[in-house]
Image 1 (cartoon, rainbow, N blue to C red):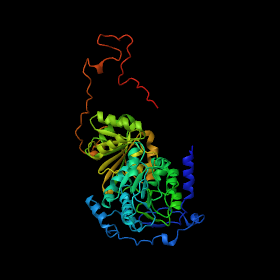
Image 2: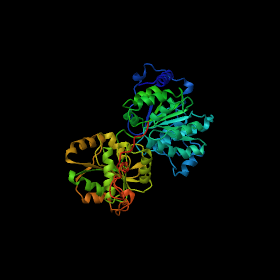
Image 3: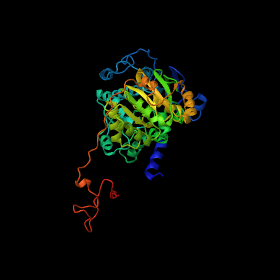
Image 4: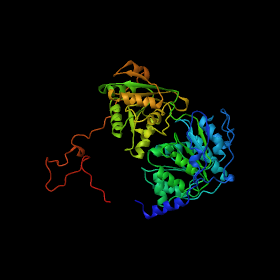
Length: 496
């Protein structure tokens, strides 16, 4: 239901809608990327003035350095300090156009370096414009679908922004808004945000987007899958007309093509990978297993020395499996939507820094989570469709590294798994296995030592914590006494 404020906000947003753009010019570096035809864009199309559209950039050499691509020296030095010395293909393809101020539509496989591809032109653009920082009015906006991706983008962006004396902040739900409001009030240059919380802060008048110079939509197709596109459109409508926009998406379906036509002016499309191509450095396996042996095989797969990421269909399944593995001597953490933001960050940090080698997750981790050196991805529950399979599997074999992907298949899932593999364009090896099977051992390698799970200390006998809620030191309840609370007692409802 719209409140008066939200209704007026939408009305103002509609009045500022950007005219639809002409059909994008496509530069396909490998594979095809479907673009809207000219006839689809003829009606209600008003091209931008010629002076507002930068000239097309000359395609860069495949071996060009960051400096040769036009990246400012301070940013090149910042990248080198972070260990990034040469650009990936998506960066080589997009940077000449994005640094020149053109709207760009880019697609690259997971782990291809898209974050740096849009972070560099944002920081370079803001540093060059030298406009003053204004409280509550960011100068650049990066929209992402999940909290985890927001944090990862902010982590990559931070050293680049620092090199140019720019301030950044993240805005997303699941945590208190006061630190976010305070950051906006102090003035920030770049906001990395999830659509829902950002809209909340705008409606509360803590933020305005009328000074945004560059807008980025990252994982736009994932935002469409999550139903965020209406909010994304309202936010784009709130940004100034004629400013630069960069959109990164795996596909142009699910309404993404509408965003391209409506909000990007004469965009250049760069595609460095076909839509459903599996990463060439992955090896794909299907382990056919009977249900009674499934947990044992999972235990074997998780027992190696490398980092292992396991995907389950449900939050309950992720939580249960992480507990089972930990109890059996293989420390594991969970990642799913029922966890608080602090718990999610804590578990992801433990997996990233090597505190635990196994992460059990739902599809919340299938996009945008970049943890180096994941050697094995296990689909404990096969995904429902091939895009999810590719995004899950893409957590391994990132940035040229090698990786292994295993799909667990029970007899009743055989038909679905065959269809999934066909749609994903892979030909996995299929092996019937059980607990202790040599094929599993060959894949995992030597087992890591088992870790005895920590024992929760029990309160000493006779202590107050160990007494019955109705007992006293004399062996019975005191007349008229209120029963003592225990951990299992119902808590008093909070006042609202």
